[in-house]
Image (cartoon, rainbow, N blue to C red; front, top):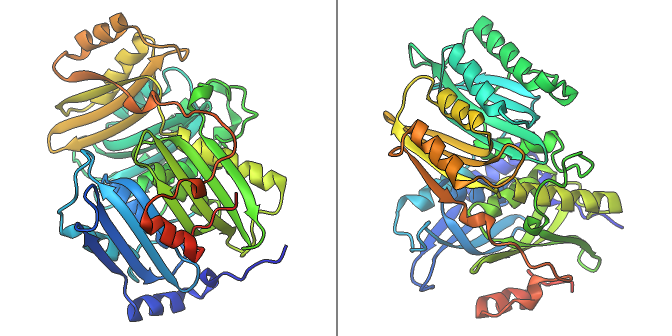
Length: 450
């Protein structure tokens, strides 16, 4: 099949010039829709523009109810229907400015993939990256090592999927509260953490590296999981996750337009659009057109893509890899288990103590988010039994008694209870109902290849 020469292959300096001549325009419209705020983005097209916009919406914790995307040519035009976490419209005047800054000529580019253990010194903290085989008690051992080495964890995130673990952790020196930049100490930290990761003699975690530059935490986690091949279905533990949570993804070529069409359906949840766009971008695909509908319990996404060389997907192996990688990207954040929220005074060794109590009560952490707000620790853990079994209420109460009833709350994860209904092939072309959808459909921008 002939390849289409993509406009995104323009020289980087020319792209910067185009952005200076035609700066991005972002408008916030609260009058068109009764239920959502419309964020409209017009900008000179450059590679990664869509991900940059979606990333800003993700960082603002906005819920994308609908999205219409078109970037086939020199111009990038998107419309997002968004609400806040409570389903309300937005009235923050700073949103448009944030998006404009993300698309401007000074927008920060992301660094390439790094190896299994990385340590990076930044202006306020040192960043540690870990990937390895997941096992019971691993997170407890990691935090115990950091506490022993006088490292204070100020923030971080941990994902597990398909027997693999990836984490990005921000630390400071326990005594000074400043970043750790001494090369000898950083080397010592890496050696100790690597020994923890290699405890089960998993050779896939044998490499170490010092990271440079800065990156977006959640995108970095996706990159690390992808590099560690958590999408590989040949893993011995690939069937451990419930089949009912498996998203439904189809990938087909649309010969008359020269695109590959990706259709996706799964239970809706926050940050779903970011996870899918991030994965397609890091797999070196360009999204030319897309439609997203997420106004009920399920989300529907349709993408018209080509590889960065201008070609659609050309082999069955590549098609299957896209399906498996998108499924993995969605399931990394769809944590099963009980959600535990820990809010209390921050102190040195807090995470080491809490995760040790989890381990002693045979709890396994499937995902974790660690934050510090002033002097308060605000942490979220998703836990299951050590073998993946449901946790009994008696176990949870025993853990709360030991940690503190007032600082550890229990909440079941609402997003792990809406399994998709498996059915035959689907297309968003069958869902167009509103006038705006029909208008874009008639223009051929979101034409379905059903």
